[in-house]
Image (tube, rainbow, N blue to C red):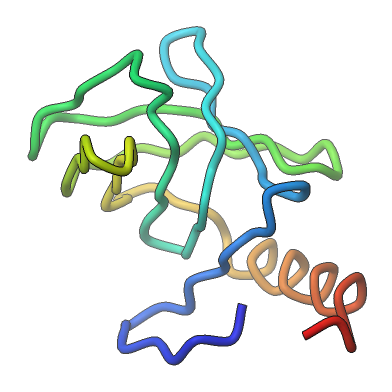
Length: 111
């Protein structure tokens, strides 16, 4: 949290203990970061998605809220075991703001 970002949408990076998960084809994966139009998750060496392949999943936040998401695989990085998805159906802005405020309150002063 706190690096400069050159994007159209704010990206929220999660500490490991607070990471949401994404459910894909019955399998859960740890999300690394999320924005209104994208997400990055650990693939756990169990999937190797092709670039531009369709993506559907469900994001589960620590507060119990969940959102269906869909889009296209932007890239897969096998060295870091990470997948980046460009979302056409993503997380609502209100939830992104709520998550940001929760993390700020929890980690304020710990930098």
